[in-house]
Structures are given as structure tokens and as C-alpha cells.
Length: 438
Ligand SMILES: [Zn+2]
Image 1 (tube, rainbow, N blue to C red):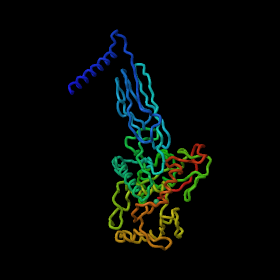
Image 2 (cartoon, rainbow, N blue to C red; image 1 turned 30 degrees about the horizontal axis):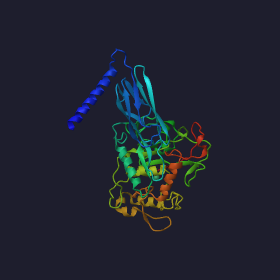
Image 3 (cartoon, rainbow, N blue to C red; image 1 turned 120 degrees about the horizontal axis):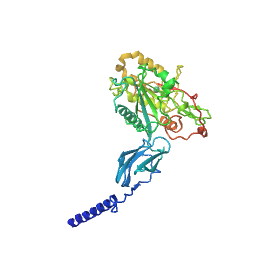
Image 4 (cartoon, rainbow, N blue to C red; image 1 turned 180 degrees about the vertical axis):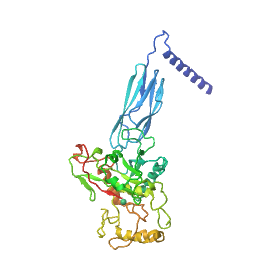
């Protein structure tokens, strides 16, 4: 039985060899007719999630293949002169819209073309589905040898992983995940995902001036904020500030208490920006991933970068501080979330100042907060609080606000259901609702 099988295989391959030869050398000495054929799966309606597929080439001619988009990459067999399997890698479509690419084969002496159209759907924003948000770290550096400026490869992924873990374990199903961007705004594949290294001359920048500025050199740093969350890294000339964020706004008639609405007939786009729409993070703490200073760990960190970024992204997605933001001395609930207990921030800061460097001895007291309404004191756990805090929770109402901003916030990546006016556009800078938060 075995022998018979082997023999049969031999006969078959011999037959193939003969067929192959007869195509290459014609008995009459006439020129060989070049042929080219490519077979592929259905590619004009592929799902949003990244995938790999192969195209089968059958040819007796020289051929090559290129793609015109970074998200649709030829990873294997970019050229050949015979049959081959060409591997194409498609990345997740986080662009918020349908996108198209063309895979083009060129073959034969005449340079004939075969083109395959690839169409990919955007990721849906369905109930319970995990929504991925592309992040790009805009790393401003003056000296490649200083590791806080020219951050080690891979480290920012670790930081973002930490933020995702914090959000995932926040007690709420936010169903979002921050991911490193894989493509540049012009569709090029990013060799170092999520990181854009930008050479910069100033060694320090005032972060408040930066965030409020309409200077073109600052605006030019920002990649289209409708497609990416930009996190700009630099050395703050305000060393006590760890991070700072723009606050979102919506287009009227969309409305959410505590969020400004823009009443305008034109829908703003990147070229209308009048400030860098981003989060800024102070790079001097970029390697601080030590556990926070809390009861049981008084020697812990006060400047943990994962907590800072998680907090700033909370602002970016529409969350105010859990504490009273009124500085008139009246203690109020100012974050538009009834389920985050509020407290008098001024009193708390006075306490922190009074303890000064001996705060470690008072950490059990400093983790607690005295509520405005003279109710029971509570332990600080909210990510939108700071100083001595566990900083590891969101509340249901905070989760709802984040969801609303993802769906309606201008310059926030995410599939949008904007009002009718969204079709109209203007050029140049616009006066946009503006608020920054540390
Ligand atoms: Zn804040």
C-alpha cells in the first residue's frame, strides 16, 4: 500500500514537471506567451479588525506588487517570476471611517498592471464591544542621550499598558482600550508604534503657555485629534505640574452639563485649531512607575506617571475633578457626577502643606477626605482626585460621561453622530471653547 502511494506521487510530479517545461520552451522556438493571474479572497468588504491573507499568483513572468497604504502591507513576496503566495497584513481600522487601498501588481516586459481594491469597515461602537483609541506620544527632545527626553523604546507601551489596566480595573466597564497608533496621518506604517520623536530646541516649556498657545509651531506638533489622542512629552518649566490636559467640547445642539457647546454653523477640523489639542505630560517623571504612596506604603511615589496619564486622559474624555473646584471657599459638587463624593480641596491642601515633608507619618489621615456636606469622611479612591489617594476607581456616572464624549466630543477619536451642521467647513483658526486642567 505504502509503496503504491509513493509511486503514484512520483508519477504526478513527473507530469507536473513536463507541463512546466512545455510552457517555458516551445518546440517550434516561438516566444513564450507571458501570463499572470492572481486569485484572492473577497476584499471589498473586510472587517475592521486586523487580519492577514494571502493572494495566489500564477505566472511565468517577472512580477512585483506594492500597496498604496500603510495599513495594507505586503509583508511577504513583493516580487517573483513564478507562482507564489503573497502575504498581505491588514491593521485594525481605528480611523473612524471606511477606508480603501489598492494592491497593484506589475508584470511582464510591457509592465502590465493588475489592481485589487481593498475596502475595510471602521470599528463599531457597539454595546459591550471593546473600543480601541489610537494614541500617539509626541516626544519633544533636544538631546538623544538624555533618556527622559529621548525615552527608551518600549517604555511608553508599558506606561499605556498600565493606564489600560487601571481603567480595566476601575470598577466600571468602560469598554475602551488605548492603543499605540500604527499609522501616521498620511497612512505610513509606524516602525515604532505610537511614538513620534520630534527634535526640539527649547530645553523646557511652560506647560500652561503651551496649552493656551495658538503658535503654529505648537499646532504643527499635533496629529489630527479626531483620529488620535496626542500625548505631548516635554520637560515642564513648571516642575510641580505632572500633567495637563485640554477639556473636550461638543457641537450644539448636543449638550452635556459641564461641557461647553460650540454654536457654529461650521464644524471644526484640525486646521481650525487655535491651541494644541492634546494631553501634556512632564517628561521628568516618565520613568516613575513605582507604587503610589498610600497607607502601608508611605515611602511610595507621589509622581507615578501611569496615574498621571490615567488622570489626564480622564480630563481629556470629559471628567472634572472629583473634589470641589470652587475657589470661593464654598464647598460644592462641581464635577456633574452625584456618585463621586466631593470635598473641600482648599482645606485639604492646607493640611498637606502643614505636614510638609512629614506627610508619611500622616498618610492614614491624608488618604481620607472630609465631605462638603459634613457627612462621614471617606477614603480617596477616584482617579479624578490627586495627592494621597488610591487613584484606582471611576464611578458609573463618570463612565457615562466618558461614553457620551466618545460619541459626541469634537476632536475625540470615535464614531460620531454629529448634528446636521457637520457638513460645513471653514478654513483658518476658529475661536473654540477652551479649558485646560492639571
Ligand atoms: Zn486634574
